[in-house]
Image (cartoon, rainbow, N blue to C red; front, side, top):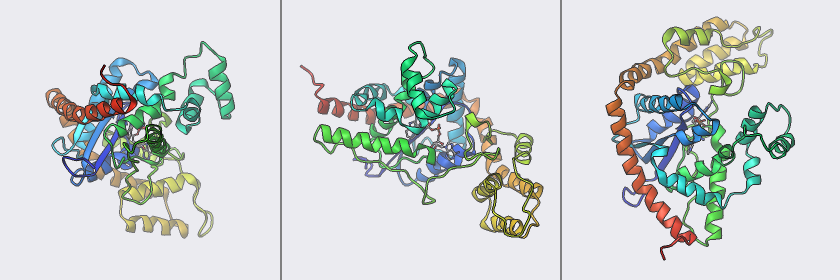
Length: 354
Ligand code: TYM
């Protein structure tokens, strides 16, 4: 709860690693928009987190601008929310250093997202022991950098620096949120204080969302190359949906549904009506389903969501003056909150003026 607004505080961010896709939209951004009227919302672009995968400087900068335009185009109102770029808040970097003193290397190495990224960077396909051996054994190996390891500390600080109550994120970020609560508890217990609360996810649906990809895999993601982007034009989007992986179709009434087809049902339930989903589920059950028809319908529904957003993105994107005004104002407001927390954290930890 913020003392001045007496509203619960909501904080969330998205990494600037490319354009936003339907996973980002349904897992996070659409929730940001729904929360903006009733909560004290602070949304940012996580450019420091994006640095963990060493992007080239020009594309990082472009990506920050793209995401900012996409936030606003999707309905985030800079008047109602604090919208800022993570690196514009130096207090976050300092508190990240302080918080790291209470975070164990072992617990970071066991984080699922770290293991997955380290495995990818090292080209390892098997278990975690091999990751640890490879990282520790090879001293010239810089493919797994320290920033990647301490990613959850930085994320915890993003959240705790605002003393957030709610953090709307998709399912893949829940482990990071769990670590945030653990770090908050540890800080409180070490310094014998109740300074930090324990922020939780915010789900309108009752459970965190995982939006599936079009390639039959479990999750839509940039590095999986299976995304529908908010900025996709009509032709590209239709083509992607029509090429989505399916199977040879149900061979007998009431057959079990394969993962790739279940993914299409999941996407359909996000963008269409319960009636439409029921229609295709029934058609699957009695073997009359034609995947081509279902995909055509799915593309129509997705376009209804994304095309108006796309138009607004194209409108806003080129307006550098407006975009920089938004983040300048956002940074000023975010820094007010962040500097207060940092001052108090320094004091609690014993960093005091002589
Ligand atoms: P990132 O940039 O990977 O993703 C941004 C948001 O989109 C959600 N998301 C999905 N949700 C459902 N289905 C999917 N297929 C899907 N793909 C992505 C993510 O769950 C996330 O909510 N570590 C964060 C960024 C971050 C952050 C924070 C978030 C940094 N600091 C503090 C909240 C609070 C990340 O990498 O998200």
